[in-house]
Image (tube, rainbow, N blue to C red; front, side, top):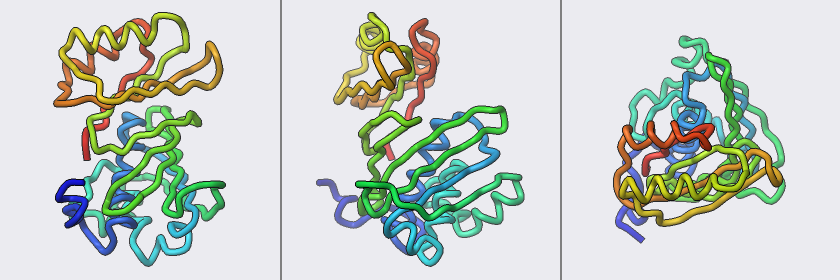
Length: 219
């Protein structure tokens, strides 16, 4: 446990779970999409579904989707800013089986045609747990620099990525592979120690076996 688990994050209130954590969920979706969002379909379950308007969760999620951090003063007006920018936002209350009470599933469509689906929970103190990306099971908290590598599940893909990372001086703290099915699309979730430069990420993304490489910086 660190001091921020005790005193909470620097944030716009009122609730670390319903606002700070929600901003971070939206921001992960924004980073994964990799472009400005044109439409956001946001499904909410449990406590999020019951209280999202009163606790500002709707504003927080949209703020994150627009790239804001949890201490950004614009969070309070994010819904207005979204309308002004042409971002179409839809909120839906639903039941996501076996999900944490503060769970959101965010489906984004980008202005350049890209798409991303992220499911995660705000688990307290502004902390989050991402559990699904584009329908594939993952598990990361955003407390460490996390690299998401989308690729085809084929021999040599993992070795190519991990050898590149070793050659770049990166130390892997945690590694997880998710895949749709054998030989289909797959996702490496790699938590690393230390900083990761844009140059390294560009080189990683250029590897032949890699379809997309995204860095989620520690939050």
